[in-house]
Length: 238
Image (tube, rainbow, N blue to C red):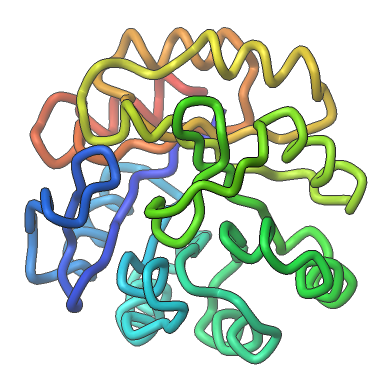
């Protein structure tokens, strides 16, 4: 299992939200690039980045930061937030991003999703952000009325093999990862490379998710608060 330490960006800063609430934002650093260097020094070869402004507005004001992170670390960077057109996708990959995550667009614009997969293939992943069992969109502010099962079936049919699945109720809450949810998804969709996101709070979570044979797990708030030692997590996930 791969570990993806996370940098959520807002206003060029590294921040975390509590359960996706923009009104409950904590700024952890004015230097996201410095954080990315720390990730690399801890042995992380993958970085998960989210443009929170982009997720809400459909633009990508923090793409310059992403470009700097790629240049500074040479890491495999995956990026989500506000990528809703082929022009935006082109800009993301021009910035050196290795994988683009489509969330809102994966639900609301099937034609764009198909075009993205046709052009970039395996460099496209889908973001499945769940709130009360239903996929949330537009920075988690709106419900799509689409169930998790429907979402994963649709992605599989389109040829998308990598999905980042976030349990919003646990994101930033330090309540532990929803292993039962990920186990159900893996059982129903065995061909999916699943990345767990939300609630990873300690080494027990790493062990539990690794036992499910997930493709990856994202570590966010637990890193910033010191609850997880990233170097130890990277080694344990192997």
